[in-house]
Length: 147
View 1 (tube, rainbow, N blue to C red):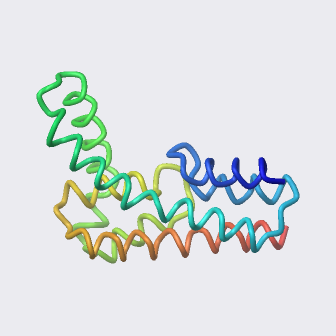
View 2: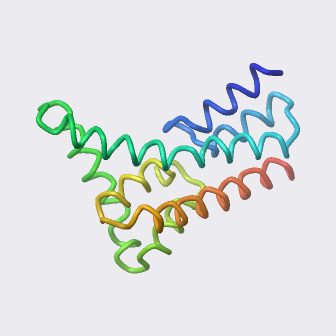
């Protein structure tokens, strides 16, 4: 059981699934849905503060490295392309809406990059992304509960 909880947490924290994949995994291995929801939500909520501070730190110390710079520019342009319309139209609410849509490539990682790129304050970004993650996780958990 501990291994299933750990994998649910790690999948929910990873950029390749987030809670959208962690919650179904936990449910499919037989963990109670409320426990799976709490684990997935907690792991996914940790993404923003850790990733945002990592971006700040990495940009401060690694920007002169050509590989880092090229990768950062690629990820930034990808995040900008995916989020520009909704954030320009709705601002912080748009960021929350973008993150809450339970589809691939609309989660906390791209939302965090977008918040950083568009210069949305840390506090507003934290609230918007946390709200989006909570709603998205609830949608996925309810879907898994009822099927």
